[in-house]
Length: 344
Image 1: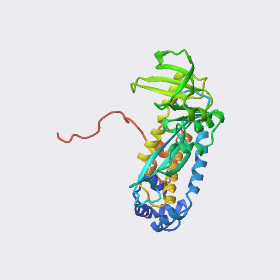
Image 2: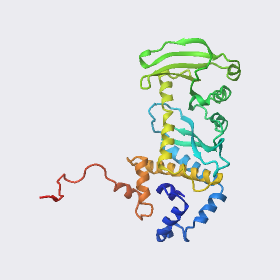
Image 3: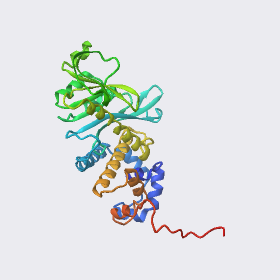
Image 4: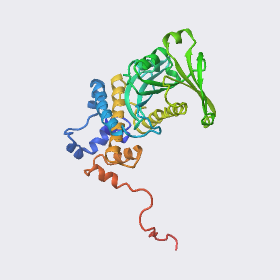
């Protein structure tokens, strides 16, 4: 299944045909018999997806240690996470368990992304009807860490739980957020920060769920030409840094875009819930493996380039570092054109 992800195979028959064509080379990696489509289909249906989820978590732990000192654009000593989800559309007739709309199925991949290295630390796969905010109940809150979320995660009871855990949140405020200002701090409007206030919620339920003070920052984004309002429970960092932190949330959008474009998680080899979750977890494992290779071998190539090189050298019996050292970029040679003239 990792071979299928790395080489972007279309289906189980495709996997079977390609691996059988490389049968002599399979022997050396521990596959003694012929690869059968029925065996793969049965494994997808029967073998518990948690096996691959646990493997991915082991790889994630190794990757996070390698990237823990990397910068993501803002110098902070705290861990910084972005939380969001992406929807993968499915045919309801083939995936009846993936409830989403009346005539449409889908699964959601809820992801907590460590911005240092863009490593997914928590992944929860649900059917499409599960609201994003419910995932806040399933992630362990790390004291001292920053959690950056979009306004779809607005739930003051859950945000207060983050606050009580000793962590910080940065969230974009909804337009109907009602508050009472306690006091304002002096701001430099040339940085884009329009106001920096300490407020308390005025709505009855919001005030009941979040009885503490909240910092409200109004910021003008010159690129979007748009005013944005952020809420946070951190009262120490400069207002501009809070705004910059929220802009880093787009790292998770880039992660979703990358994994959907370059790995196979939009078309599935099986229709059962177990098969879908198995394929997604294997895709995540491949992504993290590529990130580990890039860091351990100190490669300058992008993750995409590394993935493409691996896809055509999977069965080569050469050291992996030698494979990547062969990849040369730019012009080579002495610049002399040795091509003979075609019309002379």
